[in-house]
Length: 414
Image 1 (spheres, one colour):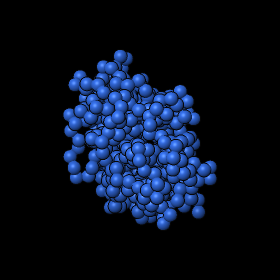
Image 2 (cartoon, rainbow, N blue to C red):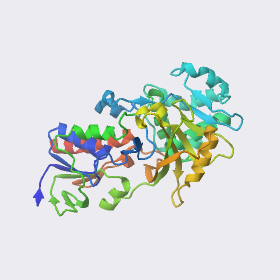
Image 3 (cartoon, rainbow, N blue to C red):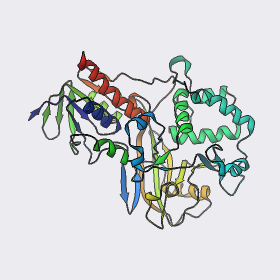
Image 4 (cartoon, one colour):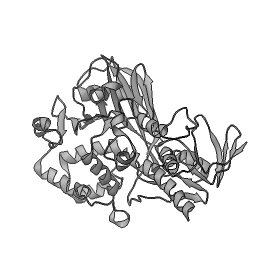
């Protein structure tokens, strides 16, 4: 069988869905093929025993411009985390709270008592982050960009606050060696300052589901693509499709397998999901471990404190995320439970492991010097889309999909 839509999009993650919607709004006939049983790509949510479990710990930052422009955020019924952190320290039996005093004035007392926010260190951190907070800020690249470790060292940022920032960013960037581009790190810092990361009431998958619901033609689920070429797509079911353009909007590794385009290095994460009878803390805060002999967990949170919809009545959900390093075995479950017991100061023997997500390619690496835009075209009639070609984020995935669509529309209008 042969069909001839204008464009075929392979992959119904955020990049592919954004591409398809942009094309559709311009009157382009488009088919979206997805091998999985649901849309979303890496942004998926499963219900397990009444709990909502995302595929790895994820948050949605409503400050991302693409979300503000293209998503009905109100309908997602976002459940925000507090603007701050809690940290386990060797010098305290309780968790130390550090919050943004502008947005969390009720936590100012706890924040001042944490002992982590010395005025001189805060001034150095503010100076390092200041460029990203200007209204006219644009992300630098090339020779002006260095690793975040180099830029923080150059700013003189050391001591307890530096350890807090490094630990927090290791969970955001999925690296603990400071290798990520300063430009990219500052972009995320800007988004954290402007927005309050949150969870949709029905889980992170509600975002791609909303994008898919706006398409005139439903995504074709369970449709595996076995080969692509300029203006050519073949499916595992034997269908041959002859469009003007093929957009491969799968993950980086799958795209490499289909097109031969080299995938950038990736960073992995393991997320443990625990059902617990009693919440080990009462704040909707991300928690980090600042002890000298800490374990592999880079962050943890009582998800149900921020998002009650993630747990059934009378129960609570805790996530714990650890770096999954290339070539190494994932962290053991008992090691994570032991560290969580020390962080929260409670026994964890009755915590039920609902699921563990080992995700070897959770984010593309973004080393310095940062290159914000990578060419999408593999050859005429065959292009790529995905966050591995832009910024490793929800924003980057959606921007890449829009770029792919707009490039086609420009060529078509010539």
